[in-house]
Length: 87
Image 1 (cartoon, rainbow, N blue to C red):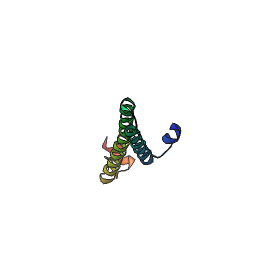
Image 2 (image 1 turned 90 degrees about the horizontal axis):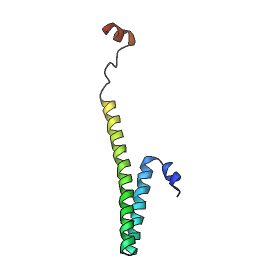
Image 3 (image 1 turned 45 degrees about the vertical axis):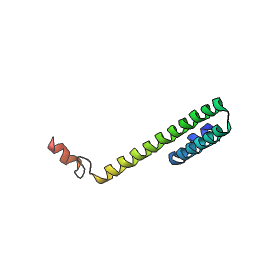
Image 4 (image 1 turned 135 degrees about the horizontal axis):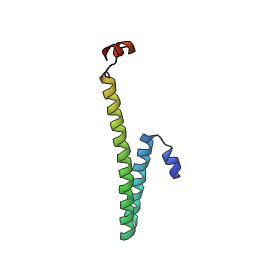
């Protein structure tokens, strides 16, 4: 899959794809010599970090949406003339 194809995936699928790439890099590290194996482990860590960043973003987005749904915004339930009168 090309890099542009990954960026076109919905965020939850993109995070999953990055986790899969991290797993592939770890498996490759096990089959490789010491120096190359270390490089693959670094790459795996970077893929995991990208996935974790996406997952944190999605969590915060869900928490924000839940908060906005559970609490009315200031001034909600009033009409524009009511607000103008209060000023």
